[in-house]
Amino acid sequence: MDPSTIPTLAPPRIVEGGALLVFGPSQRYACADKAGIPSQWQRFVPHLGHIQGQVGHVTYGVVCNCDDAGDFDYICAVEVSAFPSHPPEFTRLRIPPQTYAVFEHREHISSIAATFKAIWETGLSTAGYRATDAPVLERYGEEFDGRTGFGGLEIWVPIKA
Image 1 (tube, rainbow, N blue to C red):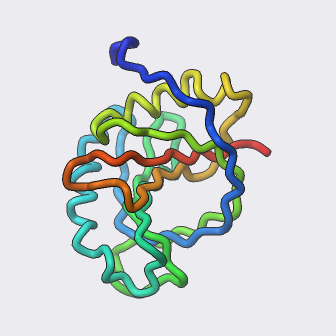
Image 2 (cartoon, rainbow, N blue to C red; image 1 turned 45 degrees about the horizontal axis):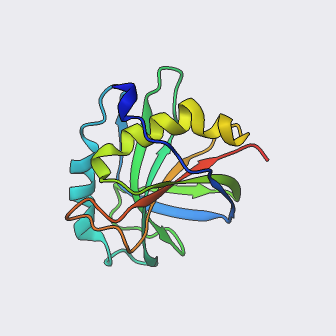
């Protein structure tokens, strides 16, 4: 990645996140090949609003189960009040209460990798925080437009308290 494309990040805000139950399709990705994530979202979108117990309209991209090679599981998800039984192939993940450094990504979704790179390379350390081993959340609020890829999102990085 060209260093000139690394965005300058605003300092994160700190949020005490409560427990969260998330539900959605999961797929394993290699660190160097995340090209399947957009199609994973395309397969998930028709389920939105039809998931039993769905809470609100916020969606999440959940990065979890990272290994030493940088490979990870990615879950397209919604919050649920209790885990539904359908679709049975969807992943159920219980995320405990956590302290997060929340970074904003206001550019097109296609540049999210550059924001993640900036967070890991300088954003956390410049702000004086260290990540902890817990799921990272991409939080897509109602202002995000999945058809255009604009509207912004937040990246919630779990930090050591």
